[in-house]
Image 1 (cartoon, chains in turn brown, green):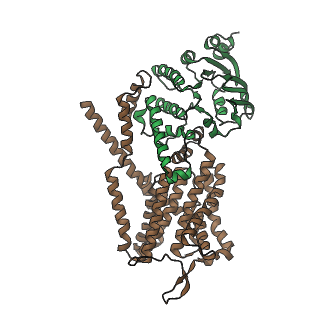
Image 2 (cartoon, rainbow over the protein chains, first blue to last red):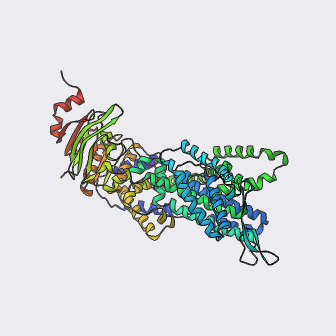
Image 3 (cartoon, each protein chain N blue to C red):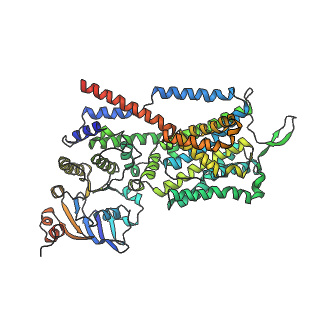
Length: 379
Length: 254
């Protein structure tokens, strides 16, 4: 690092003026080169894509359903990451918004008989509005105090669902049934399902691919946002509100809209979750699920684009695959096991798994640069 | 007509009077220095103009706009850019992105367009990158463009802030102690950079600086403050010999 700054200050002493020396052109080229995707990254993505597409054909239906559920968590975690990772607004109430999305979609399907896609989008819109309202206090308070407000939201949501039991079914849960053709050939109210339009593709597999498509779309859209002018302003608001404001970023507006978008993603995740389960209970949306989202964001790597998805999948693997394999004696200790694992992970990789990947890449770049520099010096 | 008019600005923090009825004007294209002992209220004035602090009394008018009625992020849209004495950069972004964020007010692309990555968002982003790289080149910072801000030396960070302010294409540039933390030769060079940039970008410059040699050599107007008030104003030669100024800096002779 000292090398690079030395070279800067020495070039500083050259006479001022708009110098268009060949050196300028070469630096501009290194900028574009740094942005180009490494072939290894492309290969890695292809491998991931193949595995993700092949898995539902290799696993049993209940596993495929579990993976669909992980994806609903991943979508909500993408929203939380936008809000907490990139915009620095800590929310421990995201589970409530997940719940608002689930109940909105459920009620839309039951009461209005809306198509499933419409129900999912409606959940996103409703959660955007609720998120903006929940986010209003964030204009005045931040950090731990904001976390406390969102904690209140997380605690109140299941109670509110129980309170309005005529609409939500209260503790008995909300059964999401639609009119479907039964196996005997007449119309009947059956639990909601995504019927596969293809021969050879079971319902669970069809649902898996639809949820996968939803996750990929949400991932790409959040990635677009993060890599844009708006994404920069989110980070600026997180790191230094004064710097953001003097650069012309409308700080309050940015925070509120980010709260809305983060919540809309939670709502979409929640709606898919409701469709996946077919029956939802207030106890599914306690503070615990908010913590799941935070774990997914932190384990995957806060403020990284794909981190939350990786985190959500890892958490799913842990709770649905690893934990049931443990001997019965250890079952009651699963929260402890998760806690200990998290502590070790945070010690080893404070930036999450994506953080490990990034720092390894940075180290390789520095090593390469050092090698190039010594080669230059020799020449 | 003056470009910036500061008229009777007072700032009170509880019982503390940070600014006390300060008035002065700057003409377009001028380099105006604001000097005075520590605690005179120079940075407070900057913070009033960029709407970080609220003025208790008075008004600030820039090209006919009442700045004190504007939201903070609108100030830079009008063409008033600034740097900070103790830096206000975004450590989580690269040097290049820090300069690009400077052009936020002068670029477009909201949440929806950015999320959908519409074609004009891509070309706008390209335009911003080119703009920022040009400015970084101009400030001899191109070599650190993709470097994170964290870990760079203070003098480099000051120039990154300068570059960020320029990215907004300001008409009035407010520099808060740009020479602090620089070596002797760097200070001399900074003076010529400020003059060159003023000429090149057709800027007005308001400068807070303790480095007297630089102030006296590049300023066309000097406003001297002490304890929140203006005690002298004029061309550098007059101010230098003003008895009130000498008293404020060296103590009054009995």
